[in-house]
Length: 325
Image (cartoon, rainbow, N blue to C red; front, side):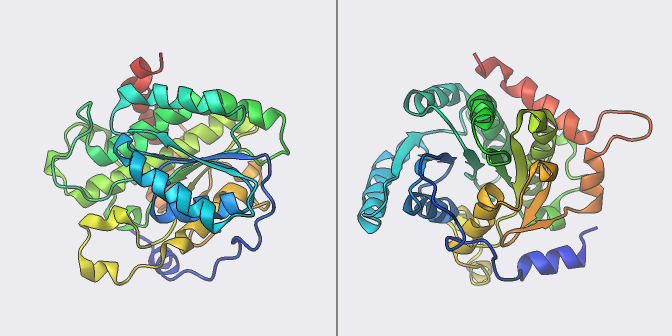
């Protein structure tokens, strides 16, 4: 089912065309990068901070000491920056804690220009669960990020009203794994909550298709409010998320900074407009497409039935609504 062209061009992509060299001064802009204490997120945070942006990096509550050390090192490295860099505790695997994290951000910031839903987990031991009992990868990538995004949607919309058009964005992350491991149609709703019989690669791929579905559905909801939603495959890069991946595969991965260029393009490239909201971004910063059978699940049929992507959004709402208030 996977397109050979998709697999090839995303595994061996052309050189990035939007990097820190093309990125303009970011004075006054505010950003959140979930999972920003390492890997792609940290590389991205350094670019934004060096360009004078106000950057909030999130991580698990257990990462406070690590984050403090990283922030100190980045500030020492870029002494000319007039930006800000701070840490926000965000445990995406426990929905009961996420509202508090969002509220803590809102105490400090009066605007939010780009939210990168970057944090992730990849191929954990079989049976790994969130605090609410969801499959860990689905819970972190989709449910945790969806709830966090919902809680921050008002400030994103408010920021869009006072900003240059097409500059306020939400970036969701996918993976090349959806090309190889996702079932027909991307995900099977009936398996959610019953993933024990599936391989962790299938569970991972379904969670990343879920991110794509959420980006498409949120794009539809927020386009008229001036907020762009995109989903990006950052590329096959070396990060701590691959800690469960065999060492031989690790040798085939790109440096993390290349993945940050994909996310930088999605979040800041002036080439992206509202008409691109809901599109898919591929390495290392290009408009791309997902598998045909996955994309088809975002398109309303002639019978007017709800799309699979919409059904997944509704499922996410049902799982998170009690944690909104």
